[in-house]
Length: 144
Image 1 (cartoon, rainbow, N blue to C red):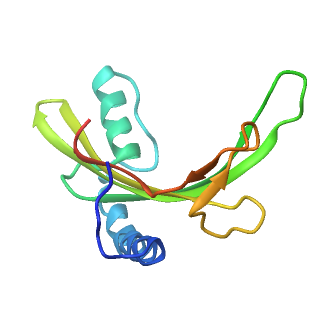
Image 2 (image 1 turned 120 degrees about the vertical axis):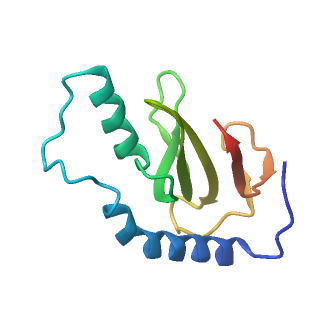
Image 3 (image 1 turned 180 degrees about the vertical axis):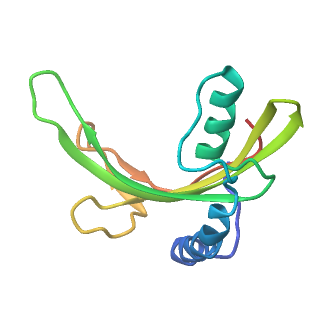
């Protein structure tokens, strides 16, 4: 599913990156004063540590940025560079009750040429030769 936002991919990614930079100092405030050690003695301790690592114990936006490279492989052949990608996620951990949480997230990802770093609008599959349109990959907006 795609949505028309009126923004270019570059404008959207720049804005999302700006939000991530602005939010980063506030994410540090989400940690409680329990000290540098993580206590994993009980299942509850494990759950609280997971929530703190992935999002926040507070109900607040927690930005993530990521990038990487995708390779393809066939039996007996060296892996082939397919493309690079870059994107961001915004997580929010909703408190449902005692020791119950629901992760809500929004994600947007863009593909880049693996050699030049240029944003891709289309991409030729090296295995099939097919030329494919490359829209921004967006998902989220709900629980899950």
